[in-house]
Length: 315
Ligand code: ADP
Image (cartoon, rainbow, N blue to C red):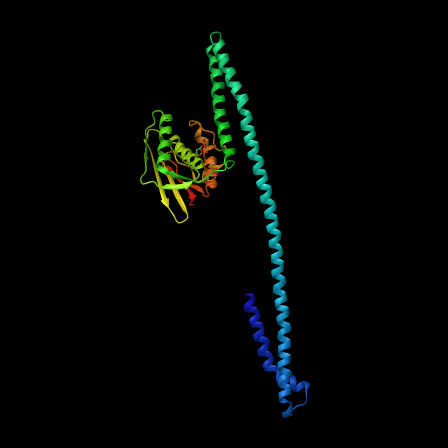
């Protein structure tokens, strides 16, 4: 029962009980049958009633007030714990980003040395080396190239949020066309079509927006079904306080149980050995989208295709 109902009910019950029992009580306390004492009795009855209900109200209110104060104390304690936890998280996130930045930055130099010396080794000794040794050098060079990709992605990830971006007016169609141009050059002989119409001009951070689109389009091209023309459709929907973007492909699709995990850094799905990648693309997408005040999610069916959705806060 809610406190206000309880208080009112108790008040009414005590009042009604007193009205019913007051005459007997007064008659028991005072001498009976004296008409001139009637008014006096009424005043006493009234005073006792008011006194009783006042005491009862005091205890009831005190009881609920104490309960409320306790809850408030608990809430303040929880709030404090939350503040401490979020400060810890913020500081450990900063440490992690700093670590990723330094590690990826400092790893580039030794890596350059490794590939440089491997190339020199190949150049000066390939006449004396047998086919296997040349192949091993090539494996080493491939590995170094892949590692370079991972380091650059890690560096890109660690840098997100470190730059003070400004809002810019962005022609979505222009950004999309530029990305498509670059991707087509890298695509080799994959057949692909990009479908879109009536794209808006929005205001947001240009680099995070471009990186987001670039990673989603590049994934839509990479994770294709064999012997099928890639069709990517790009749609934008205007909402009250945000823009909703959809990148839909007809590729290999993603199982439901992987919907959350694929946004984690370095996570690649088991069947990805044939497609190169560092597992950083979607982590970069998520961080950039959040920087633009939005969120990212997907719908997908294995063997049919995926749709990645992301929003951007309107400014
Ligand atoms: P990468 O592509 O470098 O492996 P991402 O973070 O971009 O890393 O993607 C993580 C994983 O999510 C990929 O390894 C892939 O398995 C899956 N994935 C991402 N985009 C798609 C897509 N459009 N279709 C199917 N699978 C995808």
